[in-house]
Length: 366
Image (cartoon, rainbow, N blue to C red; front, side, top):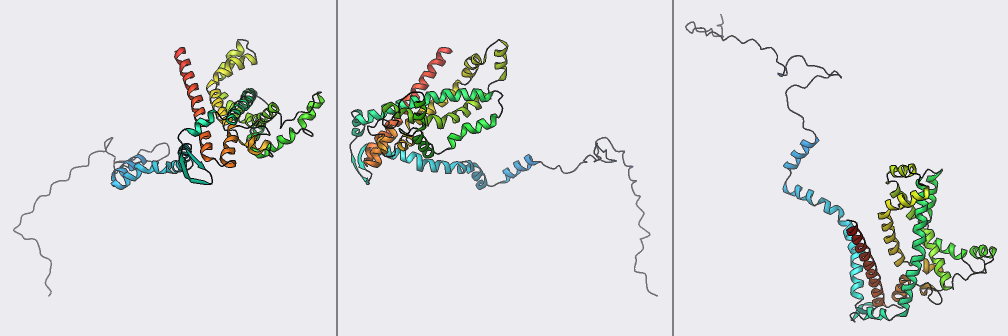
């Protein structure tokens, strides 16, 4: 017979009593065992277990686990995003400004820009006795006043009308912005036809009123008014939309209170609209002044045969046209640079005067 391979327990070894197992305790309120309580959607409450970290927790843990290179890249990433703007500004804004400032202190021609002869402030001192520069400066101021004042007044009135309930207000807003979207060349050429001496529409209307034909291109004040009209037509709608955006931020309770006090539309405009738009009006005045100082396209194209001279007698030659004439017609790059920096200094002085005036008024009001 085959012997049994299983070994039987030794009879001499006493049996060890086994410890009784404790009865399971009843589930407590926070033990997590037992039946799950379902909520409104029938999902059970989560028991104990690993907590799932949300987006914030994982982001912080991931940031902490990054190396020094990743943290350095995250620190310099915003600068990399804005670097293209500063690169373009340095190449096309800051460098030309500094180069023209350096060229204004030299005698240099456009045909040989590398051949510079130091003259110091001579280019600037010549402007003090240059009658053509004085004429261009006077024309710039005159055309600027003739175009800026009516433009802003008309824009303020149009914005006030568009602010109130008006049928087809969206259509009128698009119409107001259309002249701004029109090119300078197209608008100026159209106005050249309108202000024609023999067959112009403006002289035809004046003839119906008994006024003789006006030479809008060769007359001194007539040409200035014609150029100013082009500027007014192009920029009135643009400023009107700026005023309209500012009007929408004015609380309507002010108009309701004024209406309850018996104020008419004109009194509401004078005592509610204008004081509320004072910062915006100041902004448009500054921007319009800068634009008037740099006026170039309209007077250049208004009399194409005259070119950069601004008429046969320079009657509407602005500072921009005189700069162009000195630099690109007479090829005097140093003089043109001095004119450009003089225009810049004039704007700086005007801006400083406006800032000091505002600070003085605030000090008196306080």
